[in-house]
Length: 188
Image (cartoon, rainbow, N blue to C red; front, top):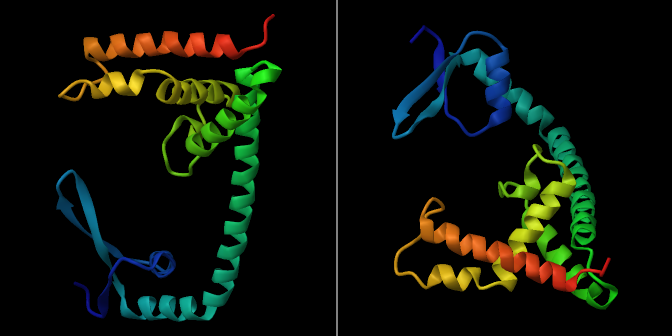
C-alpha cells in the first residue's frame, strides 16, 4: 500500500463518492460465490478525512434533500398507482351492475403490481401502461377467480413453467379468465 493511505470500509456512500472524486484510490474486492464483494477502498488518509469532514458539515442539508426527494417519490408513486388503477378498470370494462367488483379488482391489481422493487409487470418500462394493466389484471383474475392455484397445489412436486402439465393448467386458467371477464363485461 502506498505511504499515507488507509482503508475506508463500505457503508457511507457519500464519503465513498467524495473520496473517489478527490483523486487516486484503489477498490478492494474479494471474489465470492457468484459475485464480487467490495470490501471498501484504499485512498490517501487526508482525502478520507476531508470527505468525512464534508459529510459532517453537509449532513443536515443532505437529510433535508432526502426527505424532499422521498416526499416527491411518494407523490409520483401515488399518481402512478391511480393511473394504473384507472387503466385496469378501463381494461376490465365491466357492466354497471359489476362496477364495484371492477373497482375492487382494479385497486387490488394496482396495489400488487406497482410495488416498488417488486419486479412485477406494473414496474416495467418496456410496455405501455394499457398492456401492463391488461397483463396484471389477467394474472390477478387467474390467481383469485379461477381454479389455477388449487390445480397447482394438487401436485406433490412443484411444476415448472416449461412442464407440459403446467402449460395445460395455465391454458385452462387463461380460458377461465376469458370466461370470467366476458361474463362480467358490457354487452356490445
